[in-house]
Each structure stands twice: as C-alpha cells, then as structure tokens.
Length: 309
Image 1 (tube, one colour):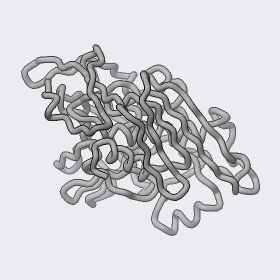
Image 2 (cartoon, helix red, strand yellow):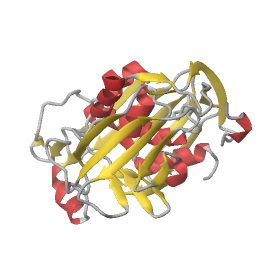
Image 3 (cartoon, rainbow, N blue to C red):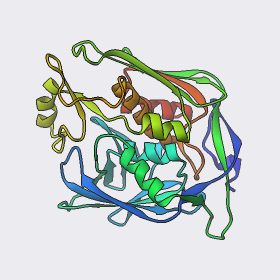
C-alpha cells in the first residue's frame, strides 16, 4: 500500500479506509465512435490496470495520468496535457470510471484520420452511458500490483468547508458522512431550461441509474459561434440535447425533466476524479453545491483541495 505520507493532501482532506479493495476491469473492452470537437473517429480501449497505478491515458507511446497536475483549461471540455500531447473531452469517460468504481485502468486511444498530437474521446450520445455499458460488459475484479498483492482503497474526506468562484458562478464543498451533489444552472434566455437544480447522494448504483444517462446540452443559437471557434465539428442532434431560445427543445424527449442539471453533476464527478491518487477514490466524501459552474471551475476546486491555489 502507498504510504499516507506519499498522498498529496492539505488541511481540507483526511484519507480514511473504505473497507474495500481497489478494483480494475476484469478484461479489456473497446469502443469506437466520433468525437465532438474534431468530428473525427476515435478508438478507445479500456484495459485492466495494476493496483496503485490509478487511471491513465496512453496515446502515441505517451502516458498521461488522469490527474489534476495535467489538466489544462480548454473550451467546453476537460483536457489533459503532458510532454506536448493532449487528450481532450475526457470528463464523461472519467466520470463513468469513477462512478462505477474502476480505480485502476489503462486507457489506450487511437484517433483515426489524425496524425497530430491531440487525441479526443468519442462523444457517443453525449452521456456516460456507453462507458458504463462497457464496464458492465466485462465486469470488475480486485486489482493487484506487480507482485500480485491487493491494496485497500482509501477515500478522501473533507475536513472543513471550502469554495471557489468566478463572477456569479461557484462550487462549494461541505463536510458530510456521504457524497452528495447539488447543482444549479440558469439559462434565462432559454425558458425550456431556465433555472433548475438537481440534488442526489452518489454511489455506484445511483450513478448508473440517475446520472450516467444524462446528455450534454447546448443552446441552438450559440452553435454557429462555437463552430466558428473550431469547436463541436462533430456535434449533432444525436450526441446532445439542443434547446432553441424561441422553439424550446429541438430533439425531445428528455430522459429526465432536469436532464441538463443532472449532466452537470456527471461532469463534476468526472472533473473531481482528477483528485484520484494511486488508485484511491477521487471524489472526496463531502456535500458539493455548485451554481453555474463549468470544467474550469471544477478544476479550480480540485486545485484548492490540494492547496495549489
């Protein structure tokens, strides 16, 4: 087991045993699909990882850990960057791995029709459901290290309240005996979305049933601007729910009445998973309350947790 002294922490966090062993996938599983921003095809292979290695991406012979140390601010997604190579739109996949208890995993990426230094994860239907299905397809097993030994899973527990904010957006966290998430969004220009909140405890079962199926969303009138910025080249009515300011939802029905705010919880879990270290739990045991947040603010909270901001 990794010594507690090796864990990056701060006054906000205490590491405690969960009573469970670290897990990984029982075997490899592959998924292929188009990406959201580049619009190109991508193949991702999820493979079992050794205990203590955590989750990491492997692209063009480069290893990029799923760690806040390598998170870079980028429009409309979470991007990891190391040694000149980038992997973007990682949040849904990481959310699914954290939400289903895959503590250690090697993520091999092959971007088709691309020779560059940037890989991107497929978007599928805009939710994390395809990744949850991939995990369920092969199942989980106890992870062992290179010597064949298992490792107890630790969880970070929040010791005192904390928050980060940008303008009128914020993400706060409060000590709790369980993981709870409350997320609010506000789109006054699109009455079909409006101001809505979603609040739920989070465990593996609730994640798979209540969070993973929620899809990403956008405002129809903002699509042209995003495409002019080189984004969402692969976006369509098949991989997002789209709301028009004047016409409402263009591709109903919604899977949940509050699907947009549920999706923000999905994103938050994926971004908080970047706190994970050595195969231990990424999302701290706390009650998170967010309003009008986004990937950059989520990453700020993780950096605040480890005391780098």
